Length: 171
Ligand code: AR6
View 1 (cartoon, rainbow, N blue to C red):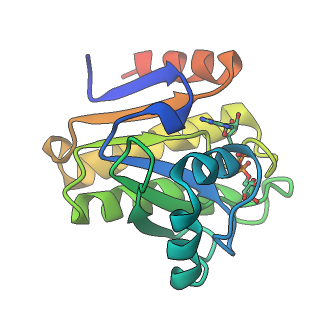
View 2: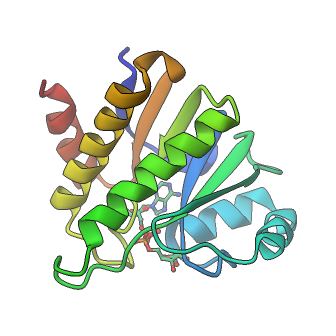
């Protein structure tokens, strides 16, 4: 298995060092993957997020995983897609890069990303997947491939899995 992988699974089931949450700027929970993570982690996660006090779009914050099988949750806030001319691509790329940087600072070796911004936030899945893979690849080129053991693109829809499988085949 390579360093970069894609799988169709529920991110809350993964016993990884870190799973990434597609949160909103309040960090106070919501629907989609955010709701699933908060439900499984338990009420302590919400308390930890309250203490952090929010997170601007493109940035990332870390908490313990509490009742999740994952040790940490890295909360990042993807951009709301407004047509593509509002800096969305740069912000989405920052979500991946800032999450990896935070993971690295916490000696995380295995990390799983959901398809950030492609649900409620409306980012076209193909564009988002390309940005995700490109951002992770360039982070690794700049910082070293040996930092991580596994970086998983955790897909929740067959459509996304197909996109990632295609992208990961490339050079
Ligand atoms: N495991 C993995 N992926 C999942 C899961 C899961 N359990 N559940 C959903 N997905 P979304 P966003 C996928 O809407 O677009 C929240 O309310 C889903 O299929 O969760 O970044 C936040 O609080 C999709 O591909 O996140 C924010 O307000 C992907 O996760 C807002 O939604 C992202 O969809 C963030 O919107």
